Structures are given as C-alpha cells and as structure tokens.
Image (cartoon, rainbow, N blue to C red; front, side):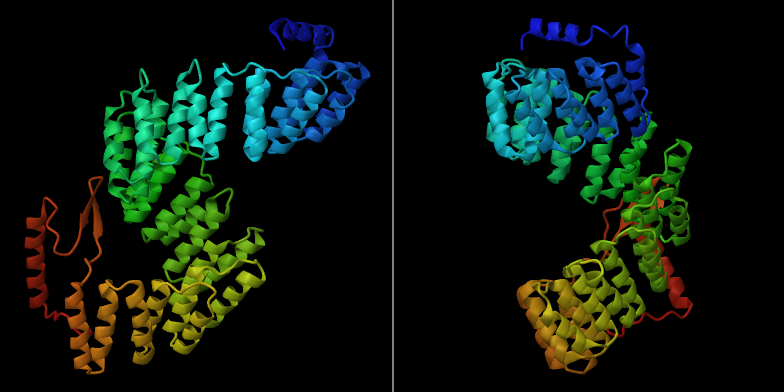
Length: 569
C-alpha cells in the first residue's frame, strides 16, 4: 500500500467523524465490557460499524477488556475492512496473548487482498515467535513487499531470530540493514548477551559511535550473569550517566554472585547520589540483607520503603518476610505477612520457610492449611519447607502425611530435596532402616545430600553398620569432603575402634584432605558489614580483634570455663 492509497483510505473511513463525534467519545469512555456492547449498538444503529476508523477504535477498546470475540464478530460483518482494522486485530490478539490468532488474521488479510503496512509486520514478527516456520515466511514477505529498509521491522526480526537462539541469522539481518538506530545496536548487543557471547557483545558495542545507557546496562548485566564481576564493575565506573536500571543491575549482580556486602554498599551509594530506587531495587537490597542476616540494615531499608511511599506488594512483601525470618525476627516477619494486602505463593512460601527455620513446625503446618483455605496452591518449594519443619521437630507421622498429600492431592512429583527431607526425618528419629528403604525406592539417583543425611542420623543413633554403607557411597560422590571423614572418625572413636580411626586419618593424609574452612560470620557497624572467619587475618582490624579475643579467653578461664572436647578427634 503506497502513501496516497493510505491517505485516501483514511479520508474515506473517517468522513463522518465530525457528525458522529459522540460515538467516538462513547467508545473511548468505555469503562466496562457492558459499555462496549452499548457502544456497538450505537454504531450499528448509525451504520458506523462499517466505518473503518470507528471499527479501529472499537477493536482497540475491546482489546483493553480482552473481548476480542466481540471485535471479531463485528469485524466479520464489515463489507470492506481495511489495513487499519486488520492491524488493530492482529495487535489485539498479540496483546491478549493469542499470537496464533494474530497469524490467522494475517492470512485472512492477504486472502482479502488487503495490503499489509509496516505496522502490520511490527506486531506480526512478535507473534511469529510462537510459530518459527511462519516467522520465516513473514521475513520473506517483508523482503518481497519492500519493507527490508524499515528499521523497526528489521530490528523486530533481530529479536525474533535471537529469541530462538539463531544468532547468525540475527546478525545477518543486522549487517544487511542500510540504516540502524541506537535501539537496533542495543538489540544486537543484547542478542549476544542472551547466549553469553560477551566477547562479540563487547566488540559490537565498541563499534557504536557512542554507547547509550541501555547498551551499557546490557553489558553490565551480561558480565554479572557470567560471574565476571570485575569487568561489570569496570563498565559501571566508565558510564557517564547511570540510571535506575544501572544501579539495580549492579545490586542484583552482586547478590547473584553472593557478594551481598557490595550490593548493600552500592545501594547506599545510589541513595547518597540522589537516585531514587524502584521496587526491583528494593527487593534486591532486602534479599541481600536476608543473606547477610543484618537486621538493623534490613530495618533501615524497610523504613526507606515506607518513607518513600513504596506499595507493599507481593515482591517487596515476600522479600521483607524472608529477610526478617533469616535475621531472627520472626515476629516482624509475621507482622509484615499479615499486613500484606495481597499474598501470592512466594509470600506464603517465605513465611512457612521462616516458621520452619525457627522451629515452629506445627505453626508451619497450620500455615499450610491456611494457604489451602485461601485457594493458593502450594508448590514443590512449599513442601520442602514444611517437611524441613517436621524434620527439625521430629514430627514423623505429620511429615509422612504431608509427603503423601504432595503427590496424592497436588500431583507434585518428589524431587531430590523432598527425598532428602524424608531421609533426614527418618534418620533423625532413629528410623534408620526406613530411611535406607526409602533411598532404595527412589526414582532418582541419590546424591551426597541424601547419603549425608543418613550418615548424620547414624551418628546420632550410633548405627555404625549403616554409617559405613553411607560413607562408601559418599566417597564416590564427594571423596574430598572432610566433613564425612570427621563424622566417621568420631563414630569409630566413640566405639574405641582406634585402628579404624588411624586408617581413616591415614587415607585423608594420602589424599591431601584437610578440614574444610569454617563458616564465616558478619557484624554490621556504621552501615558497613564486616566479615570474619576462624584464623582469618584479612580484616584491617584483625590485630585488635585477636587481642580482644585473648582477653576474653583469659576472662573465661578465670570464670572456670573448660573447653568441651568430647567427639572432637
């Protein structure tokens, strides 16, 4: 369709606009599906259901209420629907998540000898993601009808091919474009980032006359996802102007790479420079506080959300529940949870996990019941939390009942974590044989977590025979994990089997296995998080810390404290 035909079509289809302005206002002011029917009745009464302009507006209104059935039934009564009517329907079906119907109406459009416009293909290429073969046909039509120089359509084709992982085809479209705008360049860079080809992404970005913010953000996000934090930091520091996406990408990136202190530090720097975070930023920062267990900073971030008018939605809400639970403030977690205006699955999972972690097994079971009453269907994660709670509390019968309901009532297939919970439940309760039988009946290959749970249960109940079976399995799965050796040595020593103790220790020496580095701990001071580990001297104040520790040990000795050495070998 050329420009003259398009203008002529517009004039023909809207000649009565000035006369029928009330109908146009009626369509635009539709606030409910019922009013759509009233607007349609008015159009039919005045024969404006044959007017392409009014039909275009009507289809757009139908799209907003997901009533495309009404739009289609009205459109089929038109004698000569034009390209604008078809475009509205194609876009409408795509918007309402019915992409295949968009493709069907494109075929019908061609059969009715209605020539597509550039706007047609912008929507159509997106719909083609759901039918690869159709997408290639659309690409051919783009070339045949002369839209190969249209920047927006070509950019959409890059998205189409890259979304299917066909980067070579995406790059071919890019290279054949006579003109490219900034969005096109960023789209191609993003295509490389999607397949983690950061070398190609960076090389292409360096060909740009000037990188825009979206391109910088894309590169930062890509390197963070690959775990190359240093390169991401370098790009971040080079950026002339940083937007909310930049800051959030850094915070999320640090969190994903378990560098939670840096995530919180960047958040403070962001606010100090006058940048206003959004909901995604706040959720990421709250999550970082949860992983570090820094309650005071977490409460401060929570206060920031309140003071800056953030809506307590399911994302911030579930993050706060999780944070307070992991920071040891279960009461605050419950307060946030019960004050949430809406609760989705993540909110329920967060509070159940919190109750489980704090040893409130029966309360976790009750919360599962409330969740079902609220018609929120639990998922696999929910049952892991509930089964963990039963394990900690030794509720064997309740745990078995929950485990059965998972498959019988919710059709959830047991994964390795569910099996791990049940093995731990049986083992800690002294039901070693039942645990061993469950492992034997597993449809999955037992991993180190499964055998480790059994070994720990054997240690608790002094079942050396099964412990040796579990240990042999663990030596195949994780032969260099010193924790398993230590458990077996402890059990041998408890039975005065010193020859076996010496044999296991000798094997450790042969393999060069040493005790794993102890866990780390954190404290928060003046908005900074300080991390410590045993025998660690990396902290700038380590000399003062060890001096203070010596004084504490001396005071403990004077108070009559004697270090417990039982089961330490």
